[in-house]
Structure formats: structure tokens, C-alpha cells
Image (cartoon, rainbow, N blue to C red; front, side, top):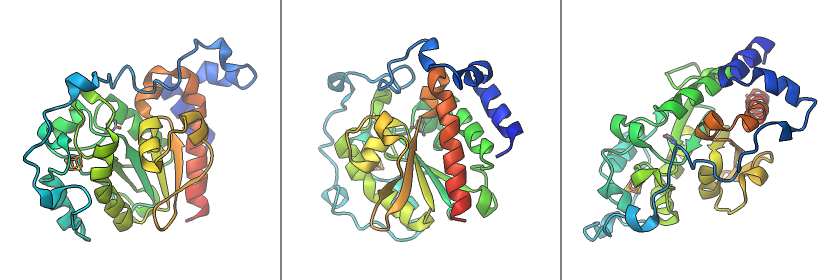
Length: 262
Ligand code: URA
Ligand code: SF4
């Protein structure tokens, strides 16, 4: 990764000066931010009581979690997700958000769930956080647009439907949706999965560990033990300058891992 890219990335994040200074100084010089509240501002959770839609009494049992035959091909999978009613999020979505990118990408990026923009457009990460994600990917030479394998990425979420009010996806919703994500991983066969933010990482890896612990080590996911790195969610980076230099370190590690396993 060349210096120009680093410069571009840091300038983009508006952190050039403090990032350089941060190399010699403790980050305490920067306004402290309560780290675990990763999405408090952008994904304002509604109270569980007010956010929860009425229980989906009419969910067909054939589609209930666990009892689905999930198609083994992309078109069948897409069709099933499109009409899915396997969890209560189906009641409040505008449309499902399947995923975007190259179906054979070495890198798979997984977020927590669609927000309002994604729910309206049917594509993951198209809002402000999405723009930053695109820049983060660009910094390591990747694009969601159809691209050569060494530039390709597939982007998805742990739930395909927007949680109302942008609350965190609940455990039962993630479990209901997991067969789709698992099939996507099986079809893409990525060399590396990157989980964005605490919620996606905790749900994906089925752990309560804080982001500070999850970031750093290489994790494994699924029967094939696909390598997983955890990094900050772009929505968090947009308003938490303290972590942006560390995000750059993560991107370099991601880039290196992909280069080494190419
Ligand atoms: N945040 C996410 O985690 N996923 C999206 O698709 C958009 C915002
Ligand atoms: Fe189905 Fe997933 Fe949407 Fe729930 S979130 S209705 S499991 S597609």
C-alpha cells in the first residue's frame, strides 16, 4: 500500500494531523468517546418495547427458522430471500437487501443490517456510512462494482431486512437470517470475511466480547473455517476520530492477508 493511498484515506477521514501526531502521543489528547456505543448516533436504537412490531402471527411454518431448504444457487437464494417472512423484520421492511458485489469475491464484508437508505434502495451500504465504506475499500483497491478478482468484494449484512428505527438486529432475527448468510458465504467462498462493527461481529461470531477484544485476532467462521477480521463500522468512524488511525491499520492488515492468500 503506497503512501499516496494512506494520505488519501487519512485526508478523507479528516484526521491527517492528529493521526501523525498520534504516532507519538497517547490518544488521550483527543476527546474521549465511549467506545462500545458504536452506533448510538446514527443507528439510534428505539426502545425494544416501542420498536417491536406485532408478533408475526401469520408467518408460514414452512418458512420458520430452521425448517427452510435454502437453495444452493444464487437465483434460488435471491428469490427465497426476496419473499422471506422467517422473522418479524418482514413486517416492517420496504424490501429485502440481499447483498451486492462480485459473487466470487475473495473479500466479503458483513454489516449489521439495512438502514433507511438501504431499505429504500435495496442495496447495502448506500447511505453516508456506505460512502465511507466505499472509500475504505478503494483504499485497498476494491470496489463493489463488478471488478477483476483482485479488486472484487461482496457486501452483505447479518440480517437482510431493516430493523425498525435502526435498532440492533435481535438474536432471533439474526438466527432466522443466518442460513442465507451462510449460503452466501458458501457460494462466494471468500478468502477473508470482514465484520463491520461490534453488532455484526458479535452476531456473526456468536460472542459477547467487546469490539476492542474482537478487533485484532483472526477469527474463523463456519464449517470451512473462513478467516474473519473485525474492524470498526464506518458509521462509527464518521463520528469517532479517535479510532480512525486504527481503522487504517486494520485495512492494511486486511490488504496484507488478501495479498498473502492470493
Ligand atoms: N449499516 C450496516 O450495517 N449495513 C448497511 O447496509 C448500512 C448501514
Ligand atoms: Fe427473512 Fe432475514 Fe428478512 Fe428475517 S431479516 S424476514 S430472516 S430475510
